[in-house]
Image (tube, rainbow, N blue to C red):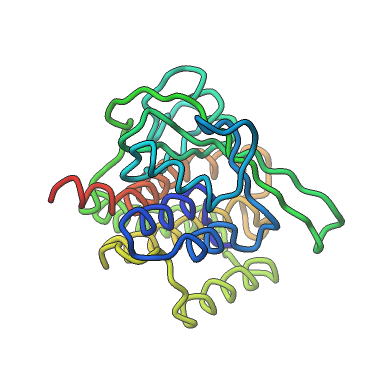
Length: 260
């Protein structure tokens, strides 16, 4: 499936709202997506959790002018700036949103209920203080695009060398879903994002899909434990590049406004 972090949706549509390009209701609906409900807890001035529409308005009133994405994993605090408590929560969730203009960050807590195929997903965004400092290891869009082009070539070489065919029903279903969403002209980002960001995001998702299929596929020669370890090691740099590019794409609207 396509990797579309919830932090990416919140940042993208939150930025569109803050720029006056979409209505609060449109932003909230797009952020929730296929989930059942999103709430925001810990907002200054609010006694308990509140809905997204109210929360986004409150953030704007607190001076927030933009939202950035962080996608950290162990050993790579991508997009984080501290303090340790926020970094630890973001690392546990493997994603977060960092506000620009107020020292606040949001970390999602996802709860699922119900049987497979009929899950009820609720998300609580926990607001925590952050350190106002440059985010860690976030490239420019141009850097991300160049890195991705090389990563795509490397991923193809690695998967060929490890005899990962990327075939089978699961792989075919994932690829078909990717093509269908692309053919349908699905809006990858919210209004206000440059065309280059949309292109970088789509390429990053394609690279991430290739890596996910490689990790999940038992087809081909990489079936022994040692070969699986070799596959993971070979693909780790490619995964890193894809995550860096995702963050660069989602953060590009804020970067563009700061340059103006």
